[in-house]
Length: 109
Image 1 (cartoon, rainbow, N blue to C red):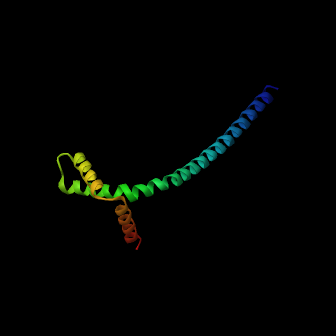
Image 2 (image 1 turned 135 degrees about the vertical axis):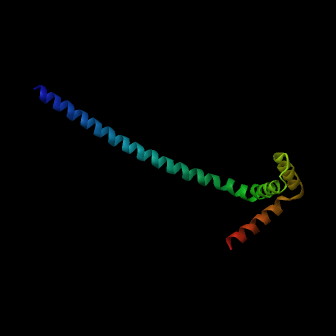
Image 3 (image 1 turned 90 degrees about the horizontal axis):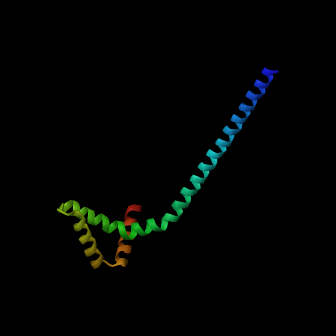
């Protein structure tokens, strides 16, 4: 009778372990699915921001960074800030958009 009780206890433990493993596997699968959905949502939401940055911020920033590399000023941050202020004062947003579209057409050709 003691052996039977031990066998039942062991069987119960194995069953519980199997159920726990199944639950854990389902939980991992759910988490993976949620992560994929969140990544897709983040990417979709970030498209307008990415387009804005690529059209308005990145081109002058790259020009400024290249100028910093050429000049190698003692205070590169201040130099870059001055470059961007000067760029903003001289350049109109419409011109930047046209220039970005032209550069995009060059790279896609």
